[in-house]
Length: 540
Ligand code: GLC
Image (cartoon, rainbow, N blue to C red; front, side, top):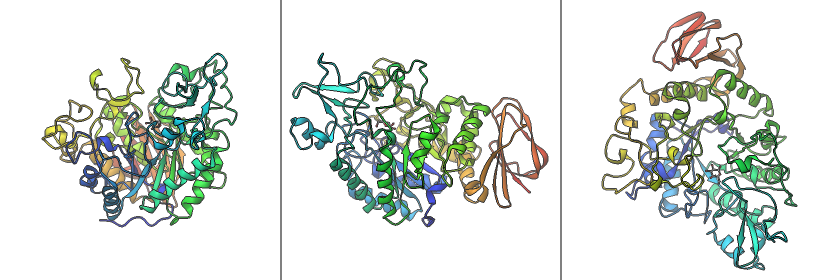
């Protein structure tokens, strides 16, 4: 057991593990993960990996149209996952192990089954009508404006009973809340208080930039160059517009200032990190606030869409560093439950480079559940698909990255008890070979590399809090940078290619860590990298 870090700014450099509750561990044998299962497997996060915080994707009551991102009650636990007593136990157990707990907060929309929406929909004069966006059709019966959903088609759904449309930026089962209504704001801030009072250390804010829209709901202009300002695989219709009116209205910053004040009013160490999909880095960075008075961390998604080359990565890191307000910590996301698996995008050899990159850049690294054992996308057969964002019959679906965690080579990969009929999504066929236990038994595994990197980082002032500077003049296949805090300097060199390379060093040092195994050798003037090898050199 280790104590909780008492640093008021623990989130600045915390290693955060994104846990997808449906697929982490199934304690009760119904084929879906649950809080009991998470408690049983907390040691993986603390003893094996040694991360600082866990972010739990939604576990709230939900019809699961969007797998929990359609919340039907913000202040309870879905019975599939357990109950509030299980949640309290989870927080206690995590804190006892020195692990912070971050929960997902989904402010842009509720489920269409949420009592607020059920009431809002019940009649045009219901007091909750204005909690959502209801508008009359245009004279020709078409939707009130040209906004399109991030999933597909118009963002407006017609309601026969009242003859009006309601707005949904995602699925029709996810109606958008009207954040301009003070009662909505008050109710949603109460949700934050509810979880803060239960002891959570922070929130991950779902699509944080979307909650404020143009007050007049004006049409978006077209996007003739089809330049994507979104880092997700996005549909053509969405790409056909410039999204200047349907999200990120400047009034959004007032909301985050209010939330920051609320968090600061607690013990001073509660945090919020926002999912911000805005390609304009000034717009993105604005979510930190002008005086560190908004979000603690604004997640940046540039690397999820960038080519996996040293040049593209260097450009992204430098641009993000340059855009950050003074004193702010970055988070460059490599993957999550919305993207193809990291190892599928870049291959297993480069997944080791990605691990070193992630854990040696400045800021708070996010590890998506399963990436630490190199899980790849699973080909989920049509009849077992769950994700409604993918086109029916289409190739793309997010299910492939959401399959159950592979713990052992036993029945259901140790995810569900042996007697379980079927796991909610199919397991990867490789689970007998690739699982946590097998990787624990192999010190050369990716899991051991993650573990070593986290241990090393935790003891390194340069990696925790040091400055970042790119290093030029290295071979094209390589990326090199220097992290420095006082006299502590770590030179990171990563080889993205299949050929060995030699990288010049600004002096002498010791290879403290390699993605390829133990080296522990002294180097001077240059360091040799094998194909697909990355090293951390401690400069003397
Ligand atoms: C976020 C979530 C994604 C969800 C969407 C709508 O992008 O990460 O899973 O579908 O918001 O809530």
